[in-house]
Length: 333
Image (cartoon, rainbow, N blue to C red; front, side, top):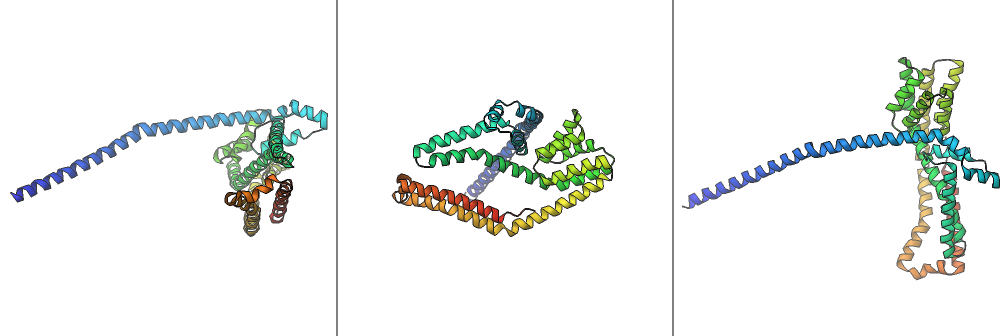
C-alpha cells in the first residue's frame, strides 16, 4: 500500500511538472505569436511613419532655407529697428540662425529676445535692487547662448564627418560621377547634419542655382573652416582645372590631422576646464547647501539691501571669472 501511494504521488508530481512545462511552452508560443503578428507589424508601421514624418520635416526645412533670405529682408521688426537705431545685422543674424539649424527669421528671434528680457525685468523688479536689470539681461541673453551652443554642436558634428565625406567624394569622382551626382550620393550616405546640407546644396543647384552659388550658400549655413576649405577648393578647381579627386583626398587628410591635434589640445586643457567648472559651481553649491541647512543664515543676502548688492557683485564676479578662465583654456587650432 505504501509503495502504491508513493508511486501515485510520483505520478502526480510528474503530471504536475508536465502541466507546468506545457503551460510554459504555451506562454512562450503565445508571446512569440503576439510579437510576430501584433508587435512587429506595429513597430514597422511606426518606423515607416517616423521616416515619412522626418522626410516631411526635412522638406519643410529646405523650403524654409530657400525663403530665409527673402523673409529676412521683408521683416517689419528689422525695418523698424533699421529706422530707429540704424540696425543692419539682419543678414548676419539669419546666417547664424541657419548655422545653428534654427529656422526662425531675424525678426522673430529679436522678438523672443525682447519678450524674455521684459519677463526677466518684471520678475527681477519684484525682488528689488539690481536684480531687475540682471535678470532682464540674463534672460535676454539666453537665446544667444542657445544659438551659440547649437551652432557649435552642429559645427563639431560636421567637422567629424568631413574626412569620411571627402573620401567618399574623391572615390565617387574617380568612378566617373559628376560633382552634382556625387553630392547627391554623399547626401544619402552621410548622416545629418552634413548629409542634410549636401542634400540642400544638391536640391538648390537642381532648382536653378549654379553649383558655385549653391556651394557658397552651404558655406554660409555652416560655421566650419573645414567645409570652407572644401568649397574654396571646388570653386578654384572649377575655374582653373585640375584633379579634384586628389585635391579632396588631400583636404580629407588635412582635416583628419586637424581633428587629431584638436583632440590632443582638448586632452591637455582638460584639467583647466575641470578646475573652471569646480570654481564656478562651488559658490552656487555652497549657497544652496547653506540655504537648506540654515536658511536664516543666508536670507540676509536676499532681504538686506547691502546683502543684495554683495550677492549681485558676487554673481557678476563669478561670470567674469568664468569668461576669463574660458579664455585661458581655449586654444584655437
